Length: 189
Image 1: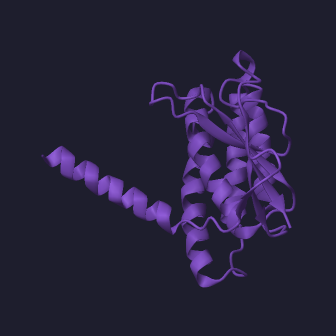
Image 2: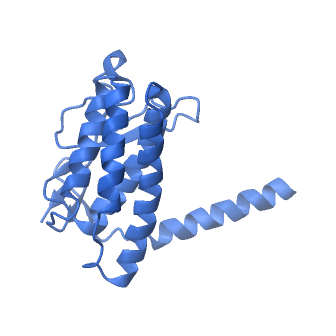
């Protein structure tokens, strides 16, 4: 009975969070793929640059460089200026920055353990995407998805952001470099 109550409570909480998520910016392109249109902004440019360098280090199976880019990303996240955002968005960004900073730190602290870095990268991606959707970007980005990643966890797969539609999988590197597909385009107005 207790498990049922916990399950129902978690389902209601998840549904409530989903129901409050703003899908007003989301539409479908000509191929039926969803895309989001965001504001043009350079406020997250350094963060996006660091994220992309980190992703490329994971693609290249370079744990040491991934750790270095994690440190740089942590530094740039701490410098992000949310003062131009409305209060509600500032709160969202502050929470997102805090969580992304922890994941970037975990990546930086795990040089030599690419499996742990990739695990943190999965969560980091969600935070960076949220930050970009709220604050804007100076470039079009693509969210790619690999259904094979994290198969021990109910086949949930893993997503990442890229500046190109070309698939270079940061979760498997050379083992399955081209595994995945573009799920969403994040276009700049």
